[in-house]
Image (cartoon, rainbow, N blue to C red; front, side, top):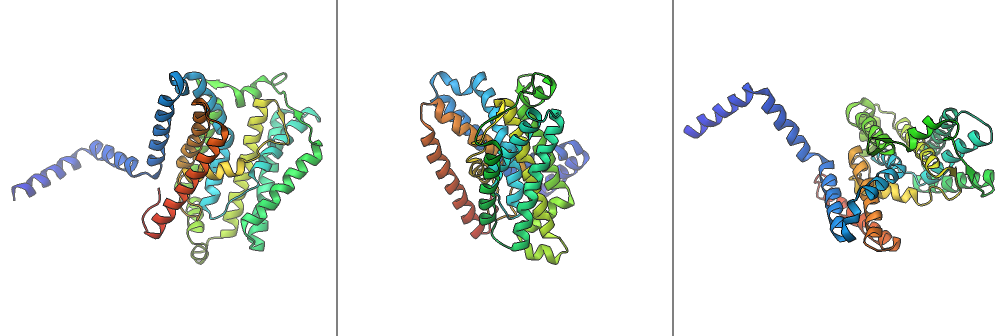
Length: 347
């Protein structure tokens, strides 16, 4: 009886203090949030490489800045890929769209003398158009996205090489438009502005997925397309829009890289498709659709970049990184499959 009275008193005190209730509620959400595990994994990876690298060079300011500059160039693509995977599809042509967006911006600025902002808009339109084409072909033909996007990957890459003849197209907006150049390559305090772009896009897509009706449609479409259709959701439209968002973000990331390396090159974006899918999956997105978070995808891209830089910091080659990346991807997919069969929540 005494214990029950005490419990009732404690409950009354909590109800009287709404701030305590709010803090406990927020803390509970953070602990149970799917991305919390991925964030912890990122911290573990950072600590391991910090101690393994000579004189802890891995966590020195120069190396951290370099990693934060490079991550968004495929991390932004990873965010769009995560959204598409949640809808139940994936896209192997993102690397070619990435390079095509870079080419459009560089070509229209250097050869046609366009304002770089107009060139950027043209690149984004081309990226979204490529995504639209991919989406329409897939939803109207009912052919697997694996086959369609694999074919379009070569189509877009071939178009790029046909236009350039395999030669680079240089891009130097910093001479006439230094502000445009700084917007994609500068710093805000000690933080590379590329990372600010990535965080901003993460917030936008997080709100879209978690707090809008369209986000609910994406989750429903990826979980069970037939059930979503019975609920009145236009699943074809949802998937096409997700393809367009991914295409637009791929082109944006391509322009970002072209500003940093001062040009568009035929080999840009190669292997980006597999890298983005791997980062999204490591970040907790299920390849089966319907499961995933946008912050998790951001942390996943950071983990992939930290693994890449970490292996170099401890004196191992890219071959070791590819082995580790492949094993990590297989393990994550296998664990998610086991959890799915056991009807437990995937991370």
